Image (spheres, rainbow, N blue to C red):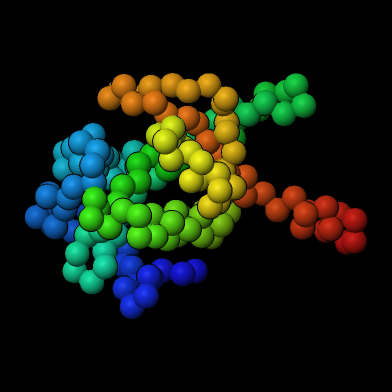
Amino acid sequence: MQTQIGEQPLSFYPIIDCNYDTYKNFRCKNSSMESFLRTEARLSHLEKDSSTTLVFVEDEIIGYFTLRHQEVAFETDDEIHTEDCLEIARIAILESKQGLGFGQLVVSHIIDLAYMFNEKYIVGAALTEVVDWYRSKFQFKLMIEDEFSNIENEPITFIYLNLEFADLLEEYYNNP
């Protein structure tokens, strides 16, 4: 798992291990993400509704992500079934660090966590403007072809990443 860019290693800390002063001035070009971090993230973490992790380079907060479990309905072969999925509820990178590869490292870290905890799927509602980034860097797929709007009336698209070991399962069943 790559967790650094050049000589800049990333560190990850649960929000409950950090002082409010550490993240109260975080700015990422998205006021709803900034507001969530300042006003809701800690309580949501304490109440076990979601888990927010702060991302640091040395002593500087450069981002955060919030994960939670979500039950999602999938349609396969004309059949609908539900799956518990790991949802990327929020992900934000400090405005001055955007475009430098830190977001890619954070999503890679989330994927590694999902594999470690044996999750089948990662889902999320991404701003439509970054969906192609998720698709090209990590092979996320569109969950729904339609575009929706979030609370801030920003266009979002629902995406997912299948983490199943289809090839390994097939090999296992074919060569026990």
